[in-house]
Length: 248
Image (cartoon, rainbow, N blue to C red; front, side, top):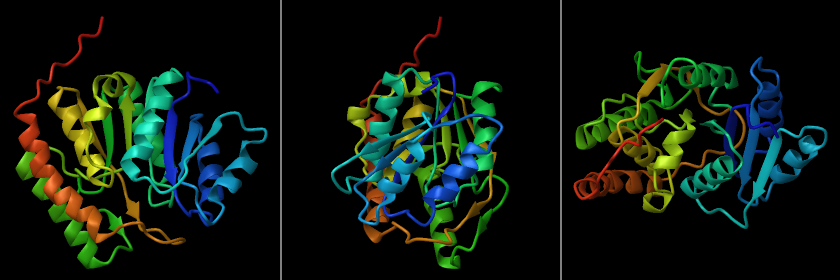
């Protein structure tokens, strides 16, 4: 472990087809990233594959959970681990290679060098940069981000993005016990709280490529949670004080 390195947190569930390629691509980057996998007891043996890579690679870490407990709780487990272990820059990405590992460097630079507190890998900042998604899903995703912007007031084009890099102080400030969503609504909640606390949020244009291997984890319940969760999130914000911490 080297806390001076940025950390990337990657939740996994049945990603045996992608995990080796993902690890190798991250390890090949000029910037040295530590990797923390959160595996929800994948029946396909994803956790076992990760363990084989841990031998001789002290920068690869694994938290194994007893079952499929949700994306949001996986990331919160990772955030807590990252803070306890002293990391200053904490990234997150999907395990299915829909996010290009090379873009990790651009997100990290935006936070570590260019002054952002949260950098978002945005599919919609410069148009619609999505490859191999069905048209219906592209439209649904784009409209969902528009809906979130209207309800919350956030000036973020890709409000549901899951490719991000945080400065440590952001995660120290947000009360994880107040995060209600466990699915993809979690990504919206984290952006909303970051924005409400007055942290600097930037979007970095990326190209999102739909998975080639494995099975998508998206479901109707995920969209339902996000739809109603945004309204509840906005409502609760009227009764919440957001005081940005003073950094000495």
